[in-house]
Length: 263
Picture 1 (tube, helix red, strand yellow):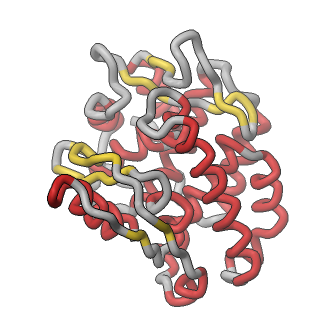
Picture 2 (cartoon, rainbow, N blue to C red):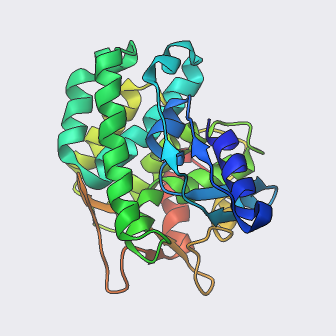
């Protein structure tokens, strides 16, 4: 899984100033996302992934047969990253997910093999172009700014994928408020997240102000302002004058959260 892979990768990056290692992911989230790209990060009480290193594995070996024994909540969590990759990079993948969801839900092995391959290609192509997150790699963080804040507020009791799915809903609505994303695309994403069974929110006791405050611990925060990444169409991300990171005033995010959460 992602936690084990990140811990092993970070240890490999630091032990003897770096030793070779291989990722053998056995969860869907690790197969399609965390095992690919060389990011290794550890969570702290102050926030997600605040301790880490870039350290590429020598190989990533994924056997989709292991997903047959994965608990339902862990399998669902991985689907959040699958949806994210479709939103940020490939409308064909998004259509595939819409059309083949029943097979994905029952863990059809042939379909899962295609899904994992497709997602690894997307993740690898982004990482090859921008290994150390100079700009393009930021798009992989869609849904993660508010998602990580929610995960921290929940003291990591909510699964990462669940928080990312909720974060995509919320950040999609922020993109709508900024008039960056067509309503019909936003609604398609929300329908797919509904189909996957993701909740509209988690940790209702965590008020919106605390969530926004926690976003300031995000690695994309600059000079007191938090940067987000936003889609402008299915498969394409908005790029501003300074790149893919878009600084957003806290008040805009608070207003969106208040309209969605009522607090």
